[in-house]
Amino acid sequence: MKKNEIMVVVIAISSFIVGLSFSYEFFRIPAIIAAWIGGAAAAYIFLSAEESVNDEKEKINIKDLLNKLDKLKGNEKQIFEEIISEDGKVMQGILVEKSNLSKATVSRILDSLEGKGLIVRQRHGMNNVILLK
Image (tube, rainbow, N blue to C red; front, side, top):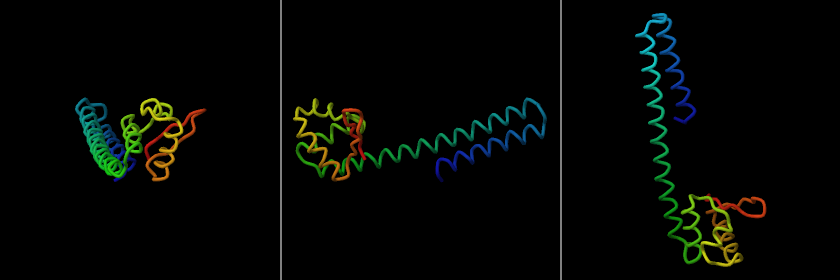
């Protein structure tokens, strides 16, 4: 189930519980408490499912990055590792500073990584932002 579909189900269940409780015993404390417990349980289920999906995506992304990294050599590997260490988003100038390579060399390496479909460069004023793809 997609995230939006799960959210719709949670909202529908919560609304049903609240509506049922209020229509069955109008404004009695036990009914209100039951509605809150039902809503909290539905929210907990929703958040747990989302967390599990995010953890699974993270594992896949790490394995994928490691496979890509193994195929690179030399300066390409160094630059790609630096992009990963910056959480997948870094300014090109920072890569030049941290790698101790010339601007031209870093630019050529980024051309190569972009050609291999590993990164995307986005213009940001006079600089480029490098993003993992």
